[in-house]
Amino acid sequence: MASPLDIRKRSLGFGSLSKWHRKRTEEHQHIYAPLKSPDHIRIIILEPSVDPTTPIRFTFHQDTLESLEGGYEAISYTWGEPKLQFLLYCNDSTQVLITRNLDLVLRRVRSKGDKKWLWADTVCINQSGNAEKATQIPLMADIFRRSKRVLAWLGLGGDEEKFAMVFLNGLSRRTMVDIQSPMSTWSIYSMVKGSFEEAVICCLSTLLLLP
Image (cartoon, rainbow, N blue to C red; front, top):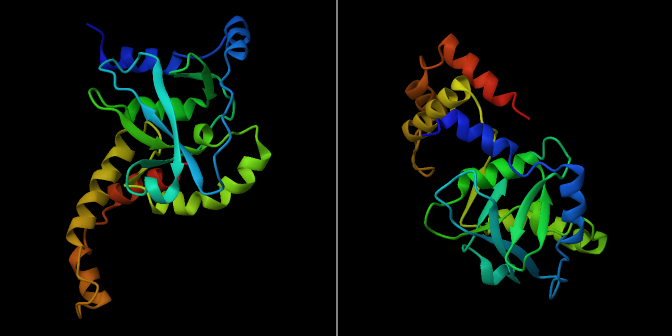
């Protein structure tokens, strides 16, 4: 039985292209269908998989942003290494090249049993279509705002980053207050003072220094 580390290593390497594979990919590269109107956006419907190392398969879907509101999750992530060298497999037997970081994100959020409706800029906006980018990029703030939720990917992370996220999650629960209540800023501060030990500050700094 493969260890979690082995699975991670395999998933990190999966889809990276040799020259031969790149040539075959170019032959099967997905041709983006034009968006039906300036109000339309494109999302991907991610197929489920119980194995995190299997190829990522999806279907494109487009509709107006208004119609899709609250029906998809938007992914926020850093592109990282800009090379497009990992593969997504479309249901029409074509392929889309993505960055290593997006490959990691999609493997992490992929469900074991359900399809997921997702928006990610690299794949949902035709990167070779300047006219499309000119209309889609100004919509990005609305795309994030109208999503069901935003999935923020900060990387695989280590123990320090994981501890920082647990701490921030706990802190947010302790400081949830009614914004209309008369609680003062000092009262909120008094709830959390003493939590910021040196080790915590170190972990938070590591998290905040991520790209």
